[in-house]
Length: 98
Image: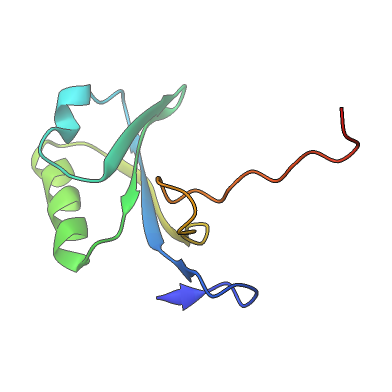
């Protein structure tokens, strides 16, 4: 895993797949760690890149169903912070007070 250089928290690699059409929420049943989103152009699948077989299984499922993949990208998530339960970076207090 990579670190962000400023903190000693690892960054996780994630993927996002953009597909044509609107996927039914049932599509992601049984696929752990993937979130389904929708836009005017189609749907997105967003999840943690656990390993190559997980990614390949997801792409294979799309191919078997004849779903057109428009775009695929990987990115690093924000660093995992042990102070938060869900792995999100904690919010910083707003400047300027009350």
